[in-house]
Length: 114
Length: 226
Ligand SMILES: Nc1nc2c(ncn2[C@@H]2O[C@H](COP(=O)(O)OP(=O)(O)OP(=O)(O)O)[C@@H](O)[C@H]2O)c(=O)[nH]1
Ligand SMILES: [Mg+2]
Ligand SMILES: [Zn+2]
Image: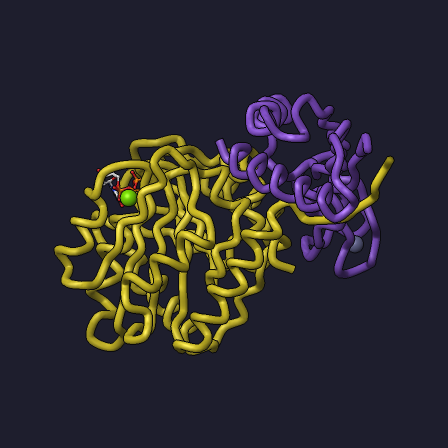
């Protein structure tokens, strides 16, 4: 359900970016979503399609780049992929690890037809 | 024309959350955001905590729900100011809504603001409310496997309450497995097993809340706020 809030915020940002770049029709929107974000792509897409109806971003393609989760060990600085969700260093066993990637939720680009 | 930008999609919420943080700091108040599934015992915990601090600290409550004022009525019965935030279907609270709630509840006279998020173990973890600390509320009847299923919440919290421990003898809840999984996601947050039925364990949690209020404890923030 929170995909609705995310879609609303996204539509507002895309509109601001469109206007800042001279307007026109939005052809595509590219976003980056980390693996740890509890976002269901299909639901986000359907809210985005719904909210963009009747606006210059109607029928725009929403491209979602998924970012895998990774972490850095606070003890030995090892950087590792989080295949398993738990933040435990595979090199030294430390639990003092920080999420490095996987928390992204960003608008990264758009294509305008001017 | 291709345009490269970089905007956190929840930027507007994060900005509103920063305003809430500044408002709280200005008022010298501490806010706790209680997050847990429906029926995990959030309101019951507030009902236990409030009478224990009411003689020393002035408490206000924001009650987030999809519908009904039932939880706000339970809190109002304790004689503290409470505002019901009705999301009308929304599965989580957002910072702008909390900002309005703070105005309505009368922040200037308060030490503690207790925010009960909408009953949901997943979505509320995504939204920074500008709170001082997030408190996860899980109950033993929900099962010990929850950290692995909802890693974001367990990773983000500054403290974790495990409620309804009076029911442990009737469940297959595996405390060791639970703690190992929780610690695999969060090495720092203190863990408070307690029962709102018997009152066991509540005092330790209240001590932690007061330490957060007096800034005597380091209550590391999750990655969403870095
Ligand atoms: N046995 C037992 N029952 C509890 C305990 N804490 C809460 N309950 C019961 O669990 C049920 C739900 O408690 P609430 O405090 O309303 O839960 P909540 O998290 O506020 O629920 P929502 O606001 O609907 O999400 C109630 O029937 C409580 O009496 C406890 O420590 N032990
Ligand atoms: Mg409740
Ligand atoms: Zn290591």
